[in-house]
Image (cartoon, rainbow, N blue to C red; front, side, top):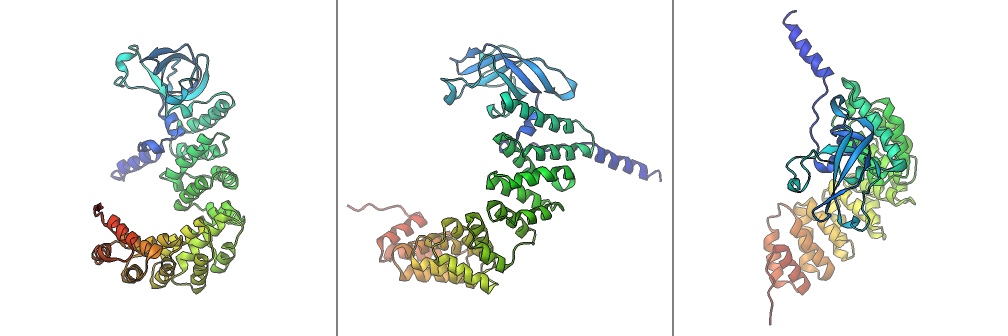
Length: 422
């Protein structure tokens, strides 16, 4: 029994000690990251600025009038806020004397490139840039959101992580765009969402997905929730999937990834929806089933010949590429051969699918056709991976094809220098 005690205490320590989070890349550093790594978070009052480098850098002696949080129980009160004037605020400075700003504050390195130009004292900046400097009503809202997040941050054990996730989920309802977007990013890259997700996060996430937020942001969030395999998500998506709009399409896309997607019969109805987003979703899934489902194959063929929108055609092509197979090659080759606006997309899709059937179809079109059809085939062959005969064929057509535009394009694809004839 004594031999087991050290191991027990090691495990207990790991469960109660906060994990050391990896530093995210700059493009993924959100307001929440900047807050928990800040020198201080609070409201600051800016005094008269000191100009340096011909006014390109302003240094504001400042006071923290309302300290929300600082690490290790410190209580900083004064700072020198450095601001590098951008090209769009030379006539009307973004920061001015008398401003009251709520923001996370970072301590600048002593080795900044402007060190020799500034007073020899500690210098500070808005962590993450001026997008995280909030004024007026937005300052009050941002303070409330970060207060909840930082309160959770200071907890011990697993409660910290679940509390932070819940606080960020609540931030999805913010009226401030940058905070909403950062909340999505935070959850989208969160590494242990399945472990730290709690019931407290369900309602704000449902509200966000039901809102008028951007479809791209909803999709990012749903993808993260689906990847985490959260039990609370399928019922939520099933309810949202009843909507015949962009949100419904996002929900169906999530259910499809969970293996709970619509039947082919449902997809036929969706492909005729009044919602462009629903049409595109249905087209993509129909395309992905075209190799093994006759009904999906037939509807995919119709969508490629019936004047579909670019979004529908692009989604359908993506689905067909995922499906692959000789039947799909037949559909796409017919589009290339018609020489219409979608011919190049279809040829590129064939290039992605690759294989003997796709190579043979594009080769035949290139040799037999002229104009857009032959040009599309040229592009498709030029992008096809592991195609042993493509390079030789394109060299031949560069020299001998009847259509000069095709000869020139083959040369471009091959990287052959253009010859100027006088």
